[in-house]
Length: 136
Image 1 (cartoon, rainbow, N blue to C red):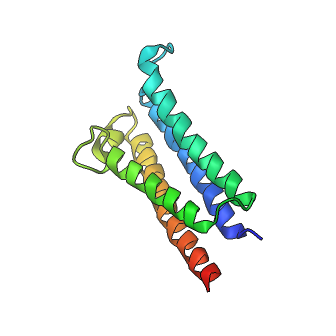
Image 2 (cartoon, one colour):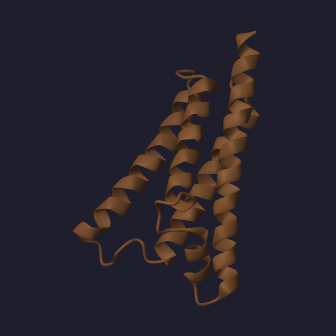
């Protein structure tokens, strides 16, 4: 039987990720009208949501265990860190806070990103715990 808390955590990460994608769209990271310049954004999101959906689907079908979910969560965290907190990005927390005319909206977007990163950490650690518990 699959762990309900782990399933709920993956669902939470998915919802937070959807909100973060909406933030990217609101900040203009998806060039409209859709064109060849929109392709990197669309493809990267297809990969992210494909990985989330595939992880959850395979986990619920007993094809992969919590270790796979832990690895996917750590990869998601690494992607988020590289995209927003590393010295190699132009999408820094400061940029997010100042990207909106209303500062409170920028801080909300940053809070949402931090919540997503925290949810990925909790999901990865809990998946590792479930994995270790099952190994005994």
